[in-house]
Picture 1: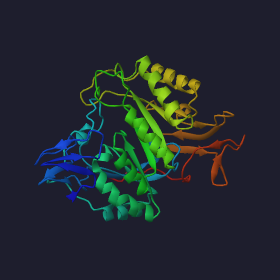
Picture 2: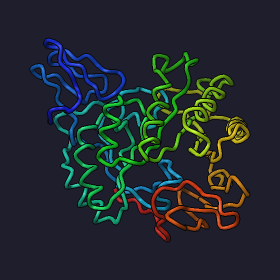
Picture 3: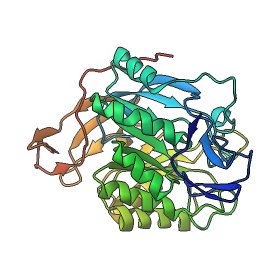
Length: 347
């Protein structure tokens, strides 16, 4: 265990300041995520280094399409979550709290493994990485110092203090989930969905890279008012150049609504583009034309993707910017393109 960085004390109770739930934890208790525990009036990160998975995976599967294209990231997760989405595909790790018998890793072990596997970066993913904050704050600066990038796949529900701490140590890639909107009633009704956009804006203002991911869950967050709210918030808070991934839901955990109708996904795709979002993608339907990047000015296909890998990369680099070779329009891509790299499952 490590003493946590972000908390405050009131008597024998401590308040965790890692995520926006701000759990008030009595002596001997744990927060909602199960990773932070009050021992003697001090908040400890009990889940520190207790990892549930470590493997090399392509950056496009996060999904991040405009960040270090065709690279691979050493992807790791721990246990627990600050949300308990009833449709969670990784519920076997997200719904399980860390335990004493879990394997414990030190940051140096992951650094050595990433180097051995030839990964370009790191990804905190699978479960909500915010609940592993102190481990990431130790690992990320060492990774960045050695030339790796560092990104997170997150629900974006962390405090501004936690977010700024991560940005300060070099976490500059963010795949942020949109769980829904204020009108939701069947699930996550107590969540303040505007926090996600607040945090995404902070990342952008700091020079970080953001892509938003909207998992369209049937009869849950797919109603017209919710779609309109998400598109409006995206344009008003983030801007037209920030990519939006509209992804298909499949039944998982104990949510048994049918898979998202593909026609519904394409309808949202067209609406988002019509309203002005320049880079909209449709995921989990295996159709390359909806996973490829087109120039928003002239329409040329610039990056063709298939099965989470880049098939063709036509962007030109000039003055440290990526541009369309036909019309010269600047395309927002952070990092370098890694040509010819194949995805290999390592664990």
